[in-house]
Image 1 (cartoon, rainbow, N blue to C red):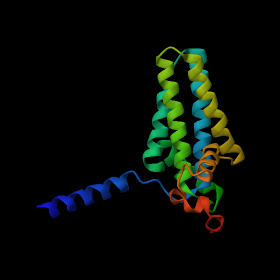
Image 2: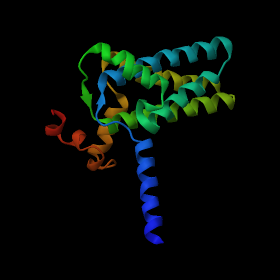
Image 3: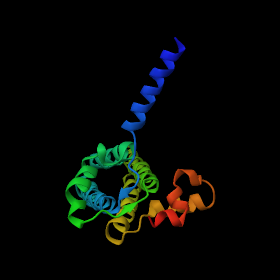
Length: 178
């Protein structure tokens, strides 16, 4: 009976692992395209928040980030648009490690969720400031190719807060050039 239970647990674990897998490596052009979409959505949320008093767009941004954290572009409309429509127009993919991108998406998810909650709590200026941070970080990624979350991931890995095993290509320069 225990072997049946453990086999079932292994199958369930495998299914969940596949369902919530994040791509590694990631096409940098797709990541930058997704960041461009985040810039547009975040600027729209700022305008709608300031001029119309609408906070609901913050929830759409947060949901998009959480969907990308959960499974990369698989569950995210913005991610799918970036991967399947926008990025192919840039030519041959430029592959970069996936774990720092997932870390960056997680930071975006936390910031956007905090903004949405703060909006509901009546602290709109702080919520809009957080959205402003998203605009800055996503703009750096989209237009300059600098991923602030990836940079932070690297610093945390360098001081040992993120184990090297999480992203060997990030910690080993020889693997990065492949």
